[in-house]
Length: 551
Image (tube, rainbow, N blue to C red; front, side, top):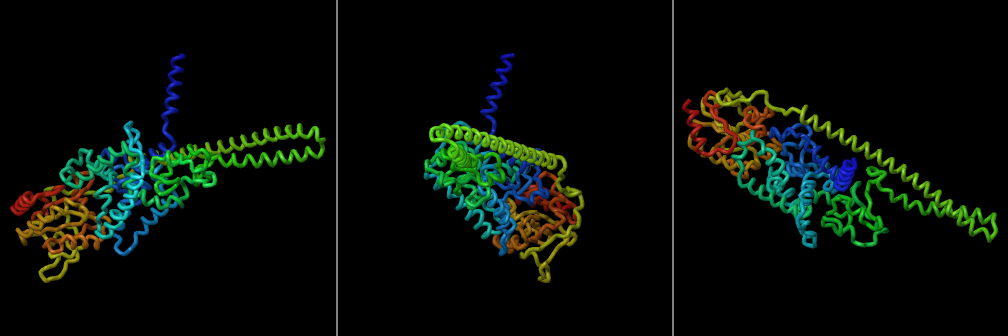
């Protein structure tokens, strides 16, 4: 029996010493809540429901199979790329609201990427300490914000440069989450130099995070740079009482981020500096709203004047009814009695505050747990992906769809020199028709298009080639701009746009995560003779065109 008690005592002590902090629990909670679509990792599917119109506070890739919201940084790049002359007020308003309320508290508490870096840093290895060099390097994220997040998307329509070339969340959560699923094995065929570059960059970030605290967060994250602008004015965070501060430097020395003082633009408001401050000069902003019952330092400040005032009143009353010989003794008695009374009142107030804080925290955690359980149940058991009712495959008649906008290219004019405004598939019955699906930021799509141009030049009027831009956030003007910049407007191909009927999804049944490029070939009667998901070679394209012509 003694051994059993000893075991449970040791187990209890171990758990007490190794139990996660409240901040760690909030980080884990946030990562689960914003990636509640667990079945997406199993099916290899990307959730595209209504909540994808909302933004996660922290960095969390839109393309991650578990993600149920959008990434604010990706949304900002996308909106800037397609804003033209109109400012993207929606996403700017979201970022402004999050910044004014939380600022970089989001980095310290709600960002899944930040959590991952901190867990990697816990691996026992020699660590690189912060210095003036790391402080200087921390300004790199502001350069990346200006160039990759703002300038390039504005200049080159449809290019979310940071997401495309740098972001490790997209590589790990998006590409990694999809590729691990066996049903998406065909996606491996389209991995090119860009994925190789981002995969190598991801490995560098992971290894660096073992030796450098929050390496990506400190040096590369533009989202942290944006929130840093709001740190001084945000409602929630840490604050420094300069009247109490003695400039001992304990806070800066303890902090693993590259701060110069508490609450500056590099501070992630993790709160680890609060307990090390010898003068209690650091506290939480917004504690009266969200941390009631935790910060009781104000009570200590109020005790002294209460005690002095009460004792003074007692001494004055005694002096009016006693002689000089007994006054000293009575004064000491009164002081002792009043001090005990004040201490008792202080303890009572303290207990009330502690009780109120307990129930406030209990209610908050209960509500948060209910929200998390509801999200997990909904996204994994009740949320159904929107898919086409009918999938078309080889040997089936493809419906007579009407395509949307016809872009201004050499192939967009009829024999009378009039530009086509819309087209129907039945317009091309009698010739072999090649339909290729692409989008503006798909590199494999753009790399294979010259082969379609060559095929059109070779077969002439015997083959019609329609290049269809997939429905996404790029508007018609943005697509036309890309076509003009890349010289596609001089080609004799027919560039058009998918319709609200989402023609692309009507035959993309080979993978659970629809992806481009995708090509299908119809014979003279509109029957599908060939379909492929991925980049084509000219030899394969030529062979399949001839096969369709011979039917």
